[in-house]
Image 1: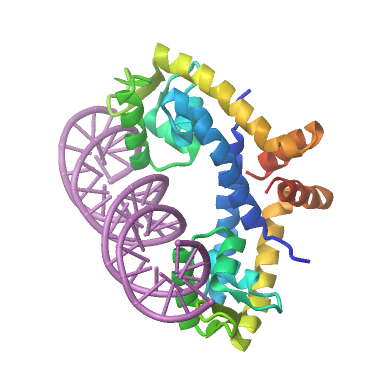
Image 2: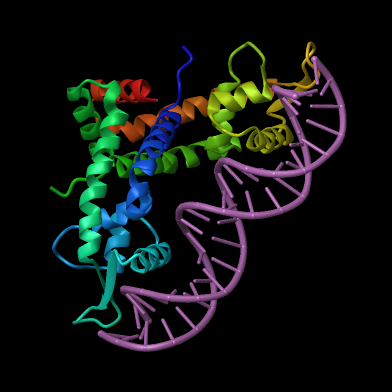
Length: 134
Length: 134
DNA sequence: TATTGTTATACTCTATAACTATA
DNA sequence: TATAGTTATAGAGTATAACAATA
């Protein structure tokens, strides 16, 4: 009867996951949000700053600071778009790609630990259900 | 292959839910966080400010401002704890209880709309899986 | 000494508005 | 006129530190 609300469950699930992914990413010098940007950049097709921001659902002004930080760490690079000089192409550097490989494995492990309370099928199911909602 | 990360799914699920519950609560003059506090206060047993804060996983300093706001709206009341004068008992007022009744129905409807993409069994299952994780 | 509530303060995350340069 | 990126700024939401009252 002491039912917890869906918003509470989603928020605290995300908080708990963050407590696992945060430390897992620390050795790579990035936080969860930066990992999210790099993850969105992993496709071989280059993307403009705005495209990445929209893919992640963050504001383009927020994106500026994120790319600034990642560029300072030599993990991504901006270069002008050949066909439209208003746009920046944002790409992972070689070092960024290497970092992402390791970081992605660390995040995989953190997610696995987060989902450890659920049997394998249920973990897969949870991801699928959320995917259908978002 | 374009897999979205679990943190992304949880965050955006919560954002989407908030976009539904926010407007649903507007007629009741409260936001989602205030609803959360009132929901935690619905049990007949009185609770101290700190107990409620811990139940919700929010800081006690944050709790002060939340209770201040709800008290200004005459939805909750503080009274001294009879046995321990350091503590405040926080309780719903009559008006607070009436408001919560309506607000809870509005939030139920918003959650239902949020979960509409899932067949009934899956909606129940999602809640259960999250409940086991948090 | 430790705990509860409070206040002042600061930090993180994010968005809005205004600007520059391109289209 | 509209778009991409940038900057400055402001607003949530939250936490830390210090204090008063009480245990």
